[in-house]
Image (cartoon, rainbow, N blue to C red; front, side, top):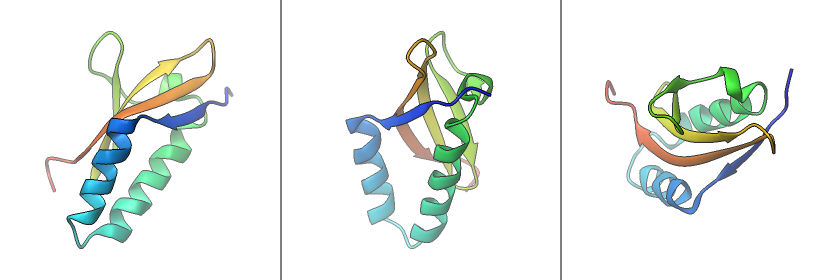
Length: 87
């Protein structure tokens, strides 16, 4: 088990604020983000789906997080968040 520090980039934070502000599903979005954030804290290098050489995506319920992993520093940087297309 490898522990990671999860950081949120400015863009991802701004997108989360916008999503949260523009919906009635605040509790659901908050819960999904909290779960994903917690999931990425442990063995992040084994989570998500690669979408390019440097980025991965992981989804839960209403949201998808796009992130980059720095295994050497054991850090995860969330770079973007979007509502899941199916919702």
